[in-house]
Image (cartoon, rainbow, N blue to C red; front, side, top):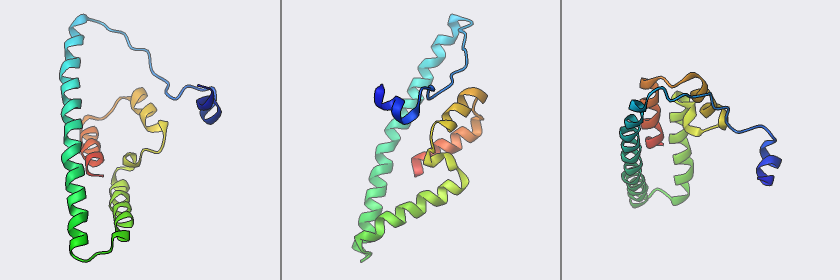
Length: 117
């Protein structure tokens, strides 16, 4: 806690709005949300494997290995031109989503963008 106060100050990282559980009927909605989160987490492994295989194919074609980091940065940077949140530039993104609520379609696009990056 001391280290985080030195780096981030005394302010909390997130300003979470007050949430009231209006009905216990809301609780079962968290089950599909958890399942979707789990499926999204499972999708990361094939994405990592695909990226690793792609860079291996480039190496097999004679592209030097030291080109991989700049190429990866170019891909992530190009994606960030459309979705800057992919680079996660601090707590401001998360705080904005918590305060304003996410746009569903943009959130889906952003999740796919993060998976691609």
